[in-house]
Length: 101
Ligand SMILES: [Zn+2]
Image (cartoon, rainbow, N blue to C red; front, side, top):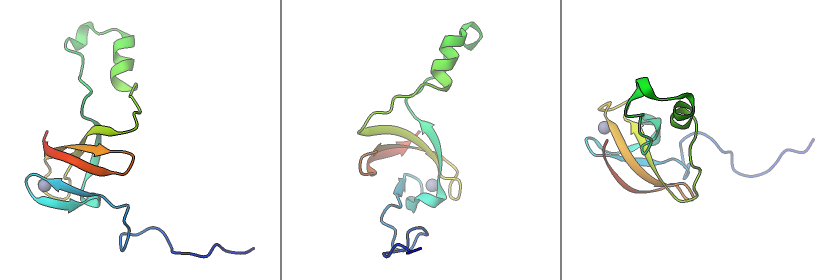
C-alpha cells in the first residue's frame, strides 16, 4: 500500500486551523484553553414548568446551521473560567467580535 505524501496534520505547531480566541479578561488565547459551550442565541423557556415537549425539543436540540456568522459561548476553562461570547464566521473561522457573556 502506498502512503500519502505531504505534511502531517494534527498537533498545534504550525497549524493554521487553530483559533486564537480573544478573552476580554486575559487577552488572546489559544483555542485549546477554551471549551465550546454552544449557541449563545438560544434562550431557555421563560416558564419552564409550563413548557410542553415541543418547546423543550426546540430548546434542547433544534439549531440553525447557517453558513456565516454564529454567536457562540466559549468558557476559558484553563484561564479565568469566564464565559466569553464570540461571533465567529464558520466559513473561515474568523472571529469578528467578542465580549463577556
Ligand atoms: Zn480568560
